[in-house]
Length: 376
Image (tube, rainbow, N blue to C red; front, side):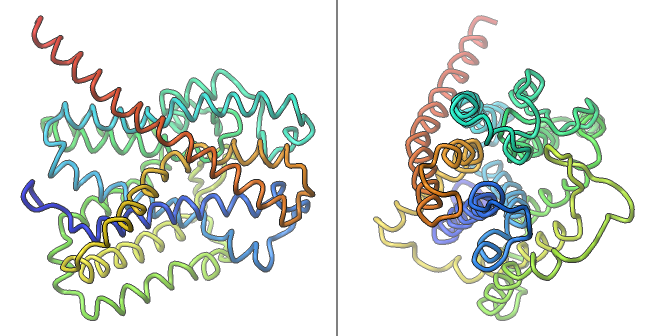
């Protein structure tokens, strides 16, 4: 697409819905686990199993969606290296800075109010450190060259994926705007520093990028797109239950991620990415000629889309804090409701701050760039 051929609005709104649903799936995965609404370390059952099984798949969906959206903005809005860099930096740091500040504040208050809860490993995997906050600030906490063994800012367990996202933004910028030989050499160097897990999951992000450019060709060849969209959606819901029990060890190789560090299940990641790619092509075929939602409905969906990144980036330290200070029994419905309401209220309050910070950062960086160019 070019500037005169924008993304179909109905499909764009669907992507906003998908992003919010994926963030919610990650939140529910954590909410329904020990020690937040469950006092036992055993496997989840019943409603908890139904609600909390899709966190890993949701993160894979985020990766594919990220590649798709970056391909779109690079083709339509961010058509120079400067525009791309300004947008990516402001997009990341308008959320990263509030997330790091809130993590520190909530963790400090939580450890003072409920030290026993924060002593649980699932809550505070290791003591807060300058290494965790510093590497998180520069988004290199998952770069395996440094051999940090899985550090994040404080309790913020999901923060690991922001390091992946920032690395893929950097690689895409090199591929899009640098000379070919520079992009190849610099890209290899970045991947060598980042390590095998970021490298192993890079194709999922690239898949999303490629899908954007191939969407019309693929959707034109896809038979029965409505049926395919429904079938792939149902398979994605079932996938954790189908492949979750499979003991796949990546052929004996470890692809470490997160604060464990854990071993990535590449079979689940690649299966989810393939199904989601087919789902995106099918829904694009269904929605590309459809009218958008009515104005108020579209505004609500767009608003939910703006919540997604802050929701993902701050929900875990907020979950830890509000679960710790909940006045209700941890396994009760009242405690779960208390945690859900307080976390959602905090995310809703922080999101406008992130949006304002993003606009301010873009304006300040552009202004500094113009001033630098004028005085050069």
